[in-house]
Image (tube, rainbow, N blue to C red; front, side, top):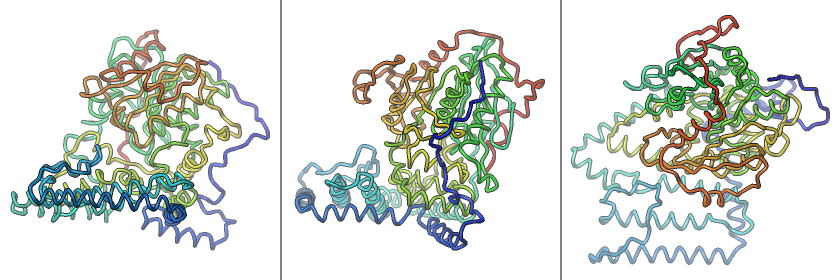
Length: 600
């Protein structure tokens, strides 16, 4: 293994990750700029980071293109008339007792109208009227010739937000389930709901973090795979997990999780912990546990996460397990960082990686799903102004963004259940983890939004590390890439594009589930399936649709396939390594899960 010092190369385009005064105010900046930023930051707090300009621009684009398309206007008028006639015909049939088929059906993922009472009058008419309007707007915000596709998506998203707000399922006098439950309980559900509302309101106003419920304590019930923290700096703790087998694979495995959430999504309960599974399969596993940054760490950059995060972890592992290469696994944003790190190491002749695994991680952001709705110059500037004032992007601000993508389920259905039906949120390991969010340091998040999402520099040959451009095609070690079928954060076809920008041996898995649920796919999990395919180095590219058809589903979990793949790349067994290496300065500091995972 070699680690060389690269020679500088002049005249290469260097990624400018943030404008000079984008994050922290500079002395040379005119003081009036700070006034402008303070005003925009205050407005961003009200709008949740959504730029009013971006909203108005999308609507203007839609309205102007529709206004010059009389044929499209006639088409929409005819559809409105047809939808109205369908609802009227249905209402007439229902009034005289005819068994008239409902003209409109809720979308497959929409469970708001699942209660059987929605098929009875007058609730069925309210439901059909709402679905008719929803159908018309879906069609109206569909492609109009000349309309910018991103503006069309934003308009459709904003309409969906408005319709979700006024759905008849949201109001106690138009929701038959609420009426039925209120009559059954004599109003106790509303009293209980008012108590829940008061509790949630006070928690929001005081910005307190709800403690984990009994049975879901970190270190006892969650994130409880035995291990030791063997390294700590200001950015992360490195956890080494205690071997569970007499012999282990010689080459260690390093997990690089995203820092937008806590690492223990990969070490939830013992039965669905990917970490516990791999340790039980005889692998030496290490995990990065990122800190939860404060305003004092506003200047942390992507380069800090690469150099003082991933590379520092690899250095520590090399000292604890000397002479062995590392199998690195990155999840979500951690996978993007790992890809950047692997390409940089390949460029610099650093051959300490044995393989690279990317789980639900994107390297190209041209088709990065619904999060692109929140990324343009105006909206990124709005987020930067909020972070300029705070030093970070706060947890509630990120939570609102993700919740708005699935507002009918994550906002309104939850509100109906909690405030009108009086139901408690039943905790699960993944919902407890989902509520344990972190902050994003200002400079890093600006670099991420601008350099990757907005300008897509990583796959455009314009992303530089230490002044020199990197290329993903330089990665020569085998890769294992996992995407999930219903991922709205990292859509599977976007993840699949990793194959476009790499030439190495690559295994691609498409598994059932979403961004988190598809990764948590332990053996025995009911209803799971996956597709798997291999690309040899230098093979011709196959598009995602053709790949999908060519690879049939296999039942069960993809974890055994991954363990077998890792084992094939890591055939030699050895005695388990010691926990840490005190002689090299890596003495165990405390038991897993460490201290950073508890930071609020």
